[in-house]
Image (tube, rainbow, N blue to C red; front, side, top):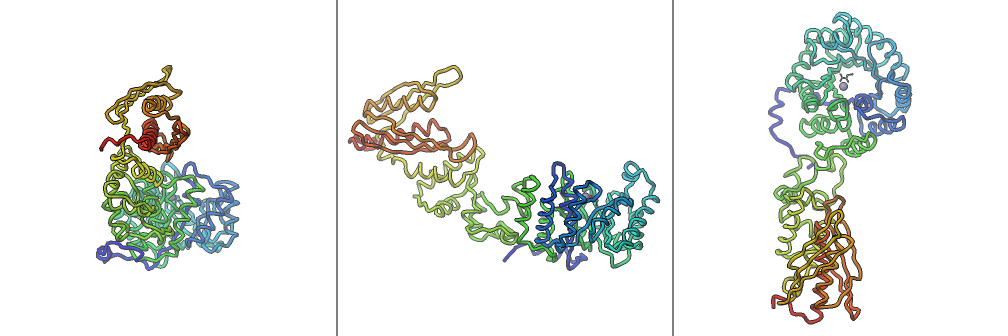
Length: 528
Ligand code: KIV
Ligand code: ZN
């Protein structure tokens, strides 16, 4: 099963006027590119257009030709590529804008003029009558050139509804094929938007396509677009990843997947290309996807909480409404790719993860590993596979208590600017204790020197090799230390230790190696 959603949606849709198919008008290259900080090169724009065609959008709004020479050239080039989707260019209601759009040889021209009091008074400085006349003239002029015309009343959701109906019915009479109702500043609610759509639909001649354009200022762009579709809107304006001005536009992946899985409404989108399209746009625009972004965020198919992970291992639909494959994400192993180890991890998923890494542990070892995982989690980190491996090596490979000859009782390290790093250790071998101090070039060196000096009391040994690795990046990474000690007869003892504190990891590794040497020399373990 590709998705598993609430069975009650059908009751809510009893009185809806859902269209059978919704047209996807992608404005990533126009409204999306208007996002501050985003500017695509000519080649990048072409790459995006090709990807959108592969994805199956119906219309590509390639840009606004009067914006710049480069923009103009890119729109012309994209229109000439004959990619499949209709290519559209945006124009204000001026002759200059419309001619520039027509000159790009596009299939559709999208003309717009604002209709709210606020915009007419402060931005356009026009009366409502002037706006109405300009809208009609622009549509007539564009249509007379034999292209499809889409008309938008900018800031529609804050416009007088009576005036809006007049504008839309007039532009339809003038030849508009599509009328788009923009929620320009994302300042409406789903039910209010649905009401506007219904009223406009009643006011215009049948046969015209009703389109919606929503912004995400209140996080409602997708909900508003879907509410409009419930009331019969047949086209949605979207951008990939929801990029766009301010909080962005309705995102293609959210709207399309909702239409598909929640509403059972068809689009032309090949959903299996959604993920690669999202990643391409992320790469080209530099706008990083937030991990919890619906549908395409990295967390969409990942689980840390023990309860969730356990259930997902049994059946992924318990906590995933969609399969990753549906949007083109590949998951060969749920354990490997979906289970995240961190402070919320439960024993079931930890064991599954370890087994997947080819590691089998005892119940006691599992408990110990879990304690270490939670310690790291409490520091605000997730545990990577490499971290987990190091913890396991540390615990599984550690000297068992019954083989413990040498124990570290105390360690003090003093360091700082202008202070020579100094360490003091107190160790115990059987019933004997030894305290030693040493200095070093740094705290790790001082601690290792002090320890070697203390161990010398029982066995002469030199540090043959010391290796420190940070398992993952960051200042709080786990330190993984490997040491080799050589005794006076030339025998070499290797041991490892892992700790978030590299001084502790270093000291523990030397203790572990020295312990092996003392055991070989016949020292009795403390437990015996
Ligand atoms: O948000 C808006 O109103 C627009 C129009 C140009 C459709 O982007
Ligand atoms: Zn917009």
